[in-house]
Image 1: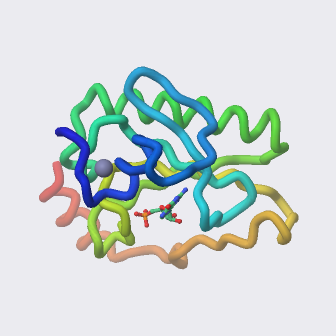
Image 2: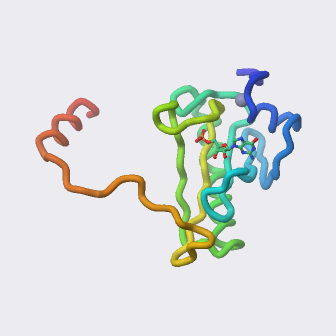
Length: 140
Ligand code: 5GP
Ligand code: ZN
């Protein structure tokens, strides 16, 4: 899909909005998130505009995943991250606020609350096994 004139990430790609670019490949680029969840929070996007996970062509998704892995490795090597979360929000009700596909690459730091005070957004609690099986059957 060509660039969307109303899309802030397309504007970042075209240099109309400044960004701190950290990596680029033929199909994807990575840049720093301006509202970092932890130290080193980066975003990986395809060069071609796609709205979300369900819309992005496989080649672009692969390119973004590969580049996100590269940034994750750099976060461990160069920032001393202890781990990394990859996050994708698909849809407004799943926290998506920019509708150009992106992967969040979120470095994680053990016992360093100045760099990382994230918490799991749900409380792991055993579910009802009948419900789990019935829902799994719908997805199988
Ligand atoms: P979403 O909420 O869609 O999963 O993530 C969108 C991300 O884009 C947010 O983390 C937000 O901080 C980031 N973001 C929004 N506008 C800009 C911008 O102009 N520049 C950069 N670098 N990041 C942005
Ligand atoms: Zn776009």
